[in-house]
Image 1: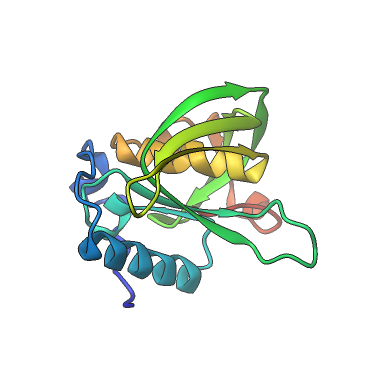
Image 2: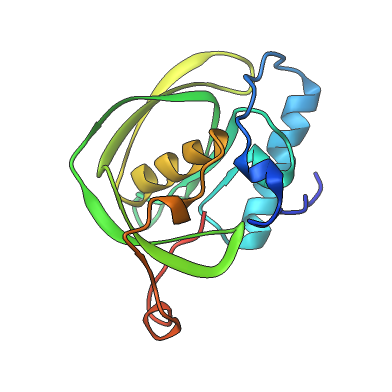
Length: 167
Protein backbone atom coordinates (compact mmCIF):
# COMPACT_ATOMS: atom_id res chain seq x y z
CA UNK A 1 0.00 0.00 0.00
CA UNK A 2 1.06 3.57 -0.60
CA UNK A 3 -0.21 7.03 0.18
CA UNK A 4 -1.59 8.86 -2.83
CA UNK A 5 -1.55 12.62 -3.32
CA UNK A 6 -4.97 14.22 -2.81
CA UNK A 7 -5.59 16.83 -5.50
CA UNK A 8 -7.22 20.12 -4.56
CA UNK A 9 -10.06 22.13 -6.08
CA UNK A 10 -7.73 23.95 -8.47
CA UNK A 11 -6.96 20.69 -10.30
CA UNK A 12 -9.10 20.31 -13.44
CA UNK A 13 -9.44 16.53 -12.95
CA UNK A 14 -11.98 17.17 -10.19
CA UNK A 15 -14.33 18.69 -12.76
CA UNK A 16 -14.29 15.76 -15.20
CA UNK A 17 -16.70 12.82 -15.48
CA UNK A 18 -15.15 9.49 -14.50
CA UNK A 19 -15.19 6.40 -16.68
CA UNK A 20 -16.68 3.07 -15.66
CA UNK A 21 -14.28 0.62 -14.01
CA UNK A 22 -14.26 -2.44 -16.28
CA UNK A 23 -11.28 -4.47 -15.06
CA UNK A 24 -11.42 -6.06 -11.63
CA UNK A 25 -7.79 -7.01 -11.29
CA UNK A 26 -4.72 -6.52 -9.09
CA UNK A 27 -4.33 -2.95 -10.36
CA UNK A 28 -7.82 -2.07 -9.05
CA UNK A 29 -7.08 -3.85 -5.77
CA UNK A 30 -3.90 -1.79 -5.39
CA UNK A 31 -5.83 1.43 -6.07
CA UNK A 32 -8.44 0.49 -3.43
CA UNK A 33 -5.76 -0.40 -0.87
CA UNK A 34 -3.85 2.83 -1.57
CA UNK A 35 -7.04 4.88 -1.33
CA UNK A 36 -7.88 3.25 2.02
CA UNK A 37 -4.45 4.13 3.40
CA UNK A 38 -4.70 7.66 2.01
CA UNK A 39 -8.19 8.14 3.49
CA UNK A 40 -7.08 6.91 6.90
CA UNK A 41 -3.98 9.12 6.84
CA UNK A 42 -6.10 12.18 5.93
CA UNK A 43 -8.71 11.49 8.65
CA UNK A 44 -11.56 11.75 6.14
CA UNK A 45 -14.80 9.79 5.87
CA UNK A 46 -14.77 9.28 2.11
CA UNK A 47 -12.52 9.43 -0.93
CA UNK A 48 -13.22 9.20 -4.66
CA UNK A 49 -10.70 8.07 -7.27
CA UNK A 50 -10.56 11.48 -9.03
CA UNK A 51 -9.35 12.96 -5.74
CA UNK A 52 -6.18 10.91 -6.20
CA UNK A 53 -5.94 11.66 -9.92
CA UNK A 54 -7.73 8.58 -11.31
CA UNK A 55 -10.76 9.13 -13.55
CA UNK A 56 -12.57 5.91 -12.62
CA UNK A 57 -15.91 5.34 -10.88
CA UNK A 58 -14.36 4.12 -7.63
CA UNK A 59 -15.26 5.40 -4.16
CA UNK A 60 -14.47 4.60 -0.53
CA UNK A 61 -16.87 5.53 2.26
CA UNK A 62 -16.37 4.88 5.96
CA UNK A 63 -19.49 3.46 7.61
CA UNK A 64 -19.49 5.40 10.87
CA UNK A 65 -22.87 4.16 12.14
CA UNK A 66 -21.53 1.24 14.15
CA UNK A 67 -21.97 0.06 17.72
CA UNK A 68 -19.34 1.24 20.22
CA UNK A 69 -17.57 -2.12 20.31
CA UNK A 70 -17.46 -2.50 16.52
CA UNK A 71 -14.83 -1.10 14.16
CA UNK A 72 -15.84 1.32 11.44
CA UNK A 73 -16.03 -0.40 8.06
CA UNK A 74 -14.62 0.93 4.79
CA UNK A 75 -17.13 0.46 1.99
CA UNK A 76 -15.62 -0.07 -1.45
CA UNK A 77 -18.10 1.13 -4.08
CA UNK A 78 -17.17 0.52 -7.71
CA UNK A 79 -19.44 1.86 -10.47
CA UNK A 80 -21.93 3.03 -7.82
CA UNK A 81 -25.42 4.29 -8.60
CA UNK A 82 -27.94 5.63 -6.09
CA UNK A 83 -31.10 3.54 -6.51
CA UNK A 84 -33.20 5.21 -3.81
CA UNK A 85 -33.09 8.00 -1.27
CA UNK A 86 -35.41 9.42 1.33
CA UNK A 87 -35.63 12.12 3.91
CA UNK A 88 -33.48 15.17 4.23
CA UNK A 89 -30.59 16.34 6.39
CA UNK A 90 -28.90 19.71 6.37
CA UNK A 91 -25.49 20.24 7.90
CA UNK A 92 -21.86 21.22 7.62
CA UNK A 93 -19.85 19.49 4.93
CA UNK A 94 -16.22 19.66 3.89
CA UNK A 95 -13.91 17.88 1.47
CA UNK A 96 -10.35 16.63 1.49
CA UNK A 97 -9.91 18.36 -1.89
CA UNK A 98 -11.18 21.66 -0.51
CA UNK A 99 -9.12 21.88 2.69
CA UNK A 100 -10.23 24.22 5.43
CA UNK A 101 -13.52 25.15 3.77
CA UNK A 102 -16.95 24.03 4.92
CA UNK A 103 -20.47 24.79 3.84
CA UNK A 104 -24.08 24.00 4.65
CA UNK A 105 -25.41 21.29 2.32
CA UNK A 106 -28.74 19.47 2.22
CA UNK A 107 -28.58 15.76 1.36
CA UNK A 108 -30.91 12.76 1.74
CA UNK A 109 -30.93 11.17 5.20
CA UNK A 110 -31.13 7.62 3.80
CA UNK A 111 -29.47 6.44 0.58
CA UNK A 112 -29.35 3.01 -1.07
CA UNK A 113 -26.54 2.50 -3.55
CA UNK A 114 -25.98 -0.35 -6.02
CA UNK A 115 -22.30 -0.99 -6.70
CA UNK A 116 -19.70 -3.61 -7.47
CA UNK A 117 -17.13 -4.95 -5.03
CA UNK A 118 -13.41 -5.29 -5.77
CA UNK A 119 -14.04 -8.60 -7.57
CA UNK A 120 -16.91 -7.31 -9.72
CA UNK A 121 -19.83 -8.74 -7.72
CA UNK A 122 -22.92 -6.54 -7.50
CA UNK A 123 -24.47 -5.59 -4.15
CA UNK A 124 -26.71 -2.96 -2.60
CA UNK A 125 -25.97 -1.00 0.56
CA UNK A 126 -28.15 1.40 2.53
CA UNK A 127 -26.49 4.20 4.46
CA UNK A 128 -28.04 6.63 6.91
CA UNK A 129 -26.97 9.93 8.43
CA UNK A 130 -23.30 10.76 7.85
CA UNK A 131 -22.85 7.65 5.70
CA UNK A 132 -25.71 8.72 3.39
CA UNK A 133 -24.22 12.22 3.19
CA UNK A 134 -20.80 10.80 2.37
CA UNK A 135 -22.12 8.45 -0.33
CA UNK A 136 -23.84 11.38 -2.09
CA UNK A 137 -20.76 13.59 -1.71
CA UNK A 138 -18.37 11.00 -3.13
CA UNK A 139 -20.66 10.06 -6.03
CA UNK A 140 -20.81 13.76 -6.94
CA UNK A 141 -17.02 13.62 -7.40
CA UNK A 142 -17.47 10.89 -10.02
CA UNK A 143 -19.49 13.33 -12.13
CA UNK A 144 -17.07 16.22 -11.69
CA UNK A 145 -18.91 18.11 -8.95
CA UNK A 146 -17.70 19.52 -5.63
CA UNK A 147 -19.83 20.13 -2.54
CA UNK A 148 -19.26 23.86 -2.97
CA UNK A 149 -21.68 23.76 -5.94
CA UNK A 150 -24.48 22.52 -3.65
CA UNK A 151 -23.83 24.77 -0.66
CA UNK A 152 -26.57 26.96 0.69
CA UNK A 153 -23.72 29.03 2.12
CA UNK A 154 -20.09 28.65 3.11
CA UNK A 155 -19.24 28.75 6.81
CA UNK A 156 -17.14 31.50 8.36
CA UNK A 157 -13.93 30.69 10.23
CA UNK A 158 -15.74 31.27 13.54
CA UNK A 159 -18.49 28.82 12.58
CA UNK A 160 -15.98 26.17 11.45
CA UNK A 161 -14.29 25.93 14.84
CA UNK A 162 -17.02 23.64 16.22
CA UNK A 163 -18.23 21.59 13.26
CA UNK A 164 -17.49 19.91 9.92
CA UNK A 165 -17.01 16.56 8.25
CA UNK A 166 -14.53 15.87 5.49
CA UNK A 167 -14.84 13.46 2.60
